Figure (cartoon, one colour):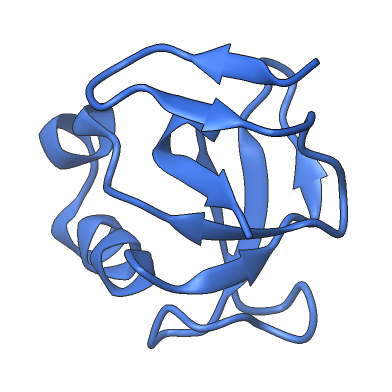
Length: 92
């Protein structure tokens, strides 16, 4: 059975997210907008609407996404790594 992620505009995930899945970033987490430097917020903004590969998971369940400066998928781990909660993405 799919899981429901609660939050603004509740998103239903049809299946658990796993490494290698493609996700679309729906919006920037409020914590990023409030607490992180402008450079970090800009990278997150560039990711909104983009389809990215899940490269891993953080200790508390955040998704690891590796992106280029323009917010597109990075082919490796030498670009930017962003960590985002699953409720701010959708599986595609």
